[in-house]
Structure formats: structure tokens, C-alpha cells
Length: 548
Ligand code: AMP
Ligand code: DBH
Image (cartoon, rainbow, N blue to C red; front, side, top):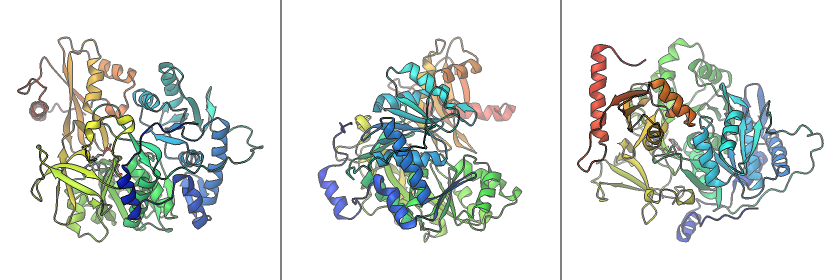
């Protein structure tokens, strides 16, 4: 059994404040599924391909999975990395860990060696629950590579067929199951799991979320979005992402007694047919995905008549695209501006159209404190853009193991890195970022992390990763390589893949040079780089040399 070596997640005075306000309750994730099953047991909880499960069935699957985990030695306080695609296995795994009081560490299917080894080192995880093969990628081989790098690595548990040398999630001998282990009674204010951020200074940062703070955000999100037992939510984005999980996401839909329909196929034809066949009422997308849906809607024969809401978030949704949602899809748009660190903003069903298309919403809670500051830390005049800082009943006060303490002020505000302005109604408009990361259609890429990998190549002297505006993804990445003997692009790509970099982090294009533009103090001027890049792109346009 582990003891939490981390100090309290929130200062005592705020614990009292959020409890007194009724935001934080005694509910925990250990009780979540039992409590929903009490209310909605015979309703359909989850649909995925040919599988359909009621709440009662999901609870039974969860309890036998908990028994399996307990037999494998997983117990209270243990960290377990969960890297699973959008399947019911994800749900029973996570709820089984909650049952035992173990702590999921959420990972995306796109994560590779760099991310997984970082998560394992930071948490001393006892197990990694993953899948055999997913979208052509062999996660067992990834597990082998990870274990080769880490001494005393975690037990690897494989959901689904062909676990090979690893432990199968389902024991072959489940005829003789034995008793369900007792359900844990965690303290609501303590750590429930670790979420991940997109990362701005390196690999994803681990975000400690408590039962009380996260459940508050889930319940309020479900209420704001009007979810109920008749909700049928299509889950297209990766299920472990904070948006998909909690805004209001899978947890919000389950909390409301609704049905979650899971798919791993975001193509418009598949999505529209599922909306039609499953009578979907709500779904969520990142802007590039929403934009393909808008473009291809007229070509696909499916009825979207049950669809009430399309949520769009994760990156800025251009107002021009936002304005097309209702005319093209026939549903309402809801913009969602959130972060795994906490604060989530929604446009509300009752908001006028210009607010829904032109803003990223307003905070969940009356106690979400919002500061908009200039570079010197003074409040900007109302309506002016500035750095967004926030503190509130579901925003973290620190990262796991106090990584990046500079992201928080002394009085506990989180520096989001976003530049926003606020309308008199309280709605926020995201204007940009002050941190050096690239938002590739909602997938956040840390410039520094990719640069460090590039610089590890013997023929690369220096490197900078900058964002290139892109009509489809919002931003794409371009690597500026300083080298006197530039390796071919194919070799650099191979090199980065061998170092375990996730596919979405591979630079979309490359430029080679012999030196960087520098700022006054000799730092690489990303501003000047972007300007140079813009010039290069313009030239490409005139000579017709754009990349595919
Ligand atoms: P993360 O910290 O990795 O969870 O990523 C959260 C960040 O994604 C935010 O701080 C924003 O930079 C960005 N983001 C999320 N939703 C939106 C949105 N609707 N509009 C603009 N940026 C967004
Ligand atoms: O991008 C995000 O991290 C995000 C977007 C919308 C998020 O965490 C959320 C809603 O909760």
C-alpha cells in the first residue's frame, strides 16, 4: 500500500470555502458508478461497435476487472498508466481502479516511448494497461521498448486479443471468480488520478486532480449542458483527454444517466451514420475535425435530426467556421475553452448567436477567479487583451511533484499561458498564447521538446520549432534546422521516430539555414523566425512549391 507523499492539493481555507459553498461534496470516484447504477441501472450506459451495456452490466464488468487487478497485486494508492482507445475496456479499467482506490494516469493512444517513460518515472506506476494493436500500431512492441529503457518497469496488462508475453486483462479462468474486493473509501479532497497537459516546456505535465474538484466540474458541466437520461453522446475524440472525459464528456453523460457511444473513427461518413443510427444528441470535436464535418456534410446521406449540440474546443474555432455550424449541421454550437489544469468555459444554450460564434464561453463557477494581466502583472483595462491567470474550485495549485512551479503565482493562481480578453458579459475571447507551444488542431506540441530531440542529431547544430498558420489545423509545425551538413528530411524523421517521438509531434515541414535571427540579448527570435517563414511561404506560393 502506498501513502500519498504529496502535500495537500489545496490550502485548508479554500477546502473549507469550496465545501461551504456546496461545490465539494463527500462523493468520490470509488462510488460514482455504483451511485449512477442505483439511479439508472437498466438504462443503456455504453455502446461500442456491436457491444451494448446497461449500467448494471458495466458495473458487473467493472467489479470483475477490479477483482482481476487485485489478484495482480494492484491496490490502494497505486498509480496505473491507462493507454486505451475509445472502447468499453477503458471504462471498466478506470472504474475498476477507482473501486480499488488505485490512481489512473491518463495517456493518449498517440503517446510513445518519450511520454510513457516519463509517466512511469514520475509516478513509479505499478502497471501499464494498454492494447495489443491499435490503428496499425503495435502497443506491445512499444511496451517492450519502454521496459528495455526502464529498470524495474511496470507490469504490462493488455486489453483485448493477443497479449503475447504480457498479462491479459481478462484471466482465462474466470469461471471461478472469487469475491469482489472491498470498495475503497478515499478522502474526497485527495488525489483521484493524474491528467496530462499538452505540455509547454517538455513532455506532458502530470496534473493532480482530486475527487471533489473534478466531480464538481463534471456535475456542473452536465447541468450547464443540459444532460439527462435521454442524452446520447457520441465520443470521437480520445476518451482519456480532459475535454472528452469531463467537459461534460463521458463522465458527465454517465453522471446524468445518459448513453455514451464510443468510436475510434472520426471520418465524416462514419460519424454522420452513427449520429443517425444511434440517435445521437451531442458530440464534441476539435476545430479541424469540426471543419471537415462542415465541409463534407452535403456529400453524406444521413439524418442528423436528433443532434442538438456540437461542442467545439481544444483550440480556437474561427468565427467564420463557427457561423456555419447551425446552417450546415442543423444543431446548436457550443464553444468550450478548457484546460486539463482546471478552468473550463462554455457558451451557454441561452447565449445570443454572436456570443456563441464569437467567444470561447464563460467559466463554469461563480468562484472561478479570472485575472487578465499585462506583461508587468497589472490588470489590463476591461476589454483589453492580457495574460489569463485563474484560481478556483477545480483548478490545480501545482503540478505533480511540483514540476514547473513558475506556472503558479504565490497566491495560487495558475498562469494559463493564454492571451484573452473579456466582454462585459464575462465571456472570454482567446487571442493567442504566450507560451511556446504549437496547437496543431488541438494537439499541443512543445517547441522545446521537439527542438531537444532535433539537436540530439549529430549533424544538427541548432533547431527551432515554430508554428505555421494552417487553414485546416489552425497551426502546423515547421522545424528550422541549423546545419552545415543538413541530413535529408527522411533521415531526420526516422531519427525522431527512433527516439520515440509521437507522430503528431514530427515537424510538418523543414527549413534549413546556417544561422538564426537573434533578439537583442542573443535569444532565438521566434518572432523573426516566423516572419522569415511567412516570407518563405509567400515565395513558395508564387513559385508553386508548397508542400503537399
Ligand atoms: P492543456 O493545458 O494541454 O489541457 O491545453 C489547454 C490549452 O488549450 C488552453 O490553455 C488553450 O491554449 C487551448 N485551448 C483549449 N480550448 C480552446 C479554445 N476553445 N479556444 C482556444 N484555445 C483553446
Ligand atoms: O484543450 C483542452 O485541454 C480542453 C479543451 C476543452 C480541456 O481540457 C477541456 C475542454 O476540459
